[in-house]
Image (tube, rainbow, N blue to C red; front, side, top):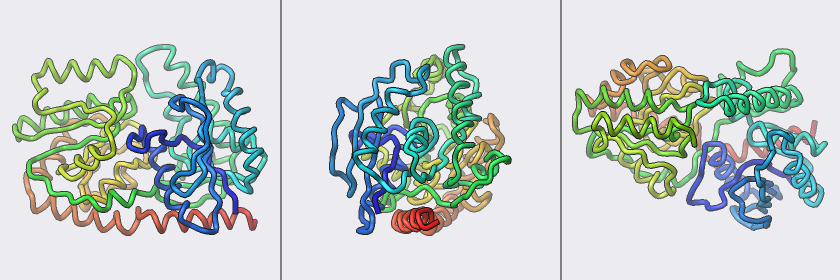
Length: 378
């Protein structure tokens, strides 16, 4: 069976700039081991230096250069043509798009049976308040296009109960429930925090609401002065990055709170090993990869009630859920776990159990292959 996966894919596997890219990377590794599958990955993205083809992770990776100029205005016309030519050479039987946007546009253009993994509800995310008018307008254009795409889609992979709930009601979808896989290397990490350490994975993008995370940690430090927090992940590329950095400096929190940015995989693994609690302060999420990874390691999670987060956190078992923007409630939940090592470890053991049962790569890869067969047979 020949399948083409359209997605963003890491040019350097040590740096994975986002959850959807991580999902594609892990899933390809799992699918690449299945002898029944001839897997091709087609990615057209701005960080690709030149068009190339590589054999990696058990698949054929087609890297296409995306200059990202006028792509929004032209609805990615140039990029879609490049992908279409590549698809013609590959001649797959089925296309699997990881997320809406260019990946799904390419799947629709192919004229082949296709499947979309719904990683982000872009028609909602596009209306998140952004710092400039230009960015807000671009977000709304992307939101409208994403809504048109999902209405042109029949087969959808659902990664959380939230994703199922927000699908347009007027369309009759064929849905498949499938968790985002976690790298097998993450399961090998031994979590053993020696000091109270809070971890936020997601960067300083608006959707992650980093200012609420900083204010939450400020409250935690008032009770536990030797606690620390690290924020990992890409910056927003907006004034919010400087706002967060300035707040940390002005409040004198620089020795307790660090903004690490996008880090190599090995640094991420070190952070997982040292983390007492994972904190998610997002205002919009579908099925955060970070929660699956936290469970795989055995880290309790405190998060907001945004999107799919409350569908993934088991209240009072693996963590706590608080309202969006409620830095007081979030801080109280973090303190409840940091104040008692016995309670924290109990939550961690339960998280690890769920990680092993729900997010292991091998089972998710085999279920994905079953879905491909179902679609082609039908």
